[in-house]
Image (cartoon, rainbow, N blue to C red; front, side, top):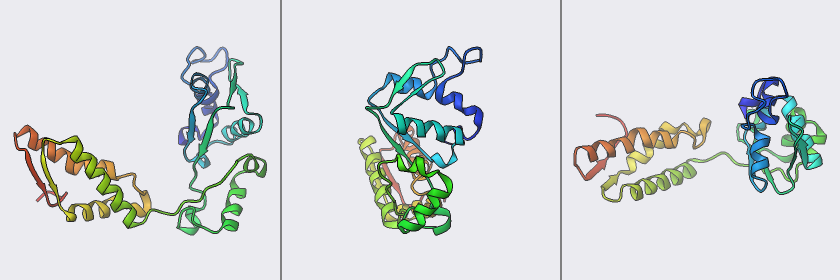
Length: 208
């Protein structure tokens, strides 16, 4: 939620107040929740939010509802809110897989205790390991083969190893995998389709 990192971004959440540009728009977060009262709401990287946004989230967790800029009461009773954060990663270098006391201390340094007490559960995650990344890549390749069923596609184990190395998963997790596969595998397949070649063998993602 880096787009909510400055104080003015509160209007993206609650809507613009009367007399300001965007008052008649319904593109703010609370409006979308009003239209989807049974939604699962995922707030990614809330540690990047401005304190005013955190205060709004506290009110939502405390009361189960909040007023938008148009004075509409937005009810959250039927919503599930999932918040993610990288807190705990920088010091331990193992993501959320730090001990409970260390993680709790870091959370309390960033969020006030009242906010943390309104959260039902805090789930810690391990960093992705190479075996996890390999499984993700193999699954993506399987999806790719299903997408191009008319193509006799062979992708070597070396390609998987190269994608693992290029993904820089220690820093980015699995974020770069889709882009690598699109740029270095899917584009090759499309080029072969354009050239009326239905047999594609890929031994490396790097041009030779």
